[in-house]
Image (cartoon, rainbow, N blue to C red; front, side, top):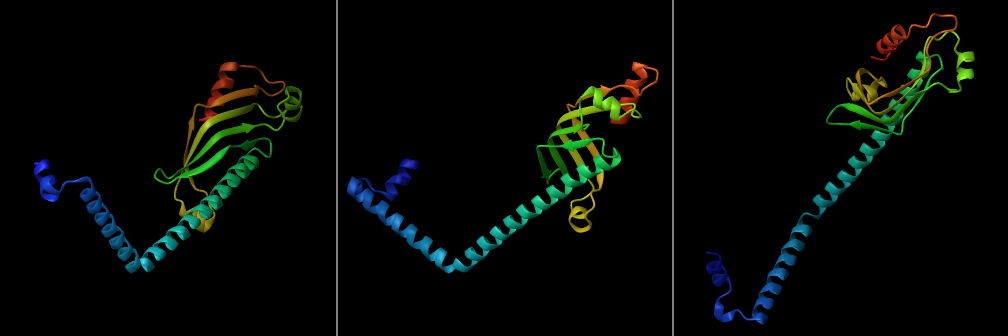
Length: 192
């Protein structure tokens, strides 16, 4: 069937190399001509589409940077406020995952400002627990993206912690009785 089709387009009597090149150059010149006509007729539309695409990409980029900075600052301020400045957080990257409606923080760390044992016991005599955490991936589920943009409010539904590494730097308050199982159970309740 294919050989019959080829014979109809290029009969065997005229199937010389020069004739094939001439027909191919005729085909490419027709293709170029029709492409030029297409572009010429739709030049304004193509330019408008290109401009709209560039503008939307720019808005998306700057909006993403604004939201990421706002969310990162909000998380850092929230941890500092709730711990009364004792803990600080840091992370490598913060991205909004559009199809999941959540933020992804990579290399998230929660640390006490001074990790030296003597300084921790001196600073935190009233604290029963002093710990640090390192989390490779932390997912934060939010209510909606627009509340961040319009109202500047970060409404969190839940947090998904994956493979956390928690180090207990201080287990109990000074003068308290040491019960490791109760302490570990209380720490589990605080973290979960």
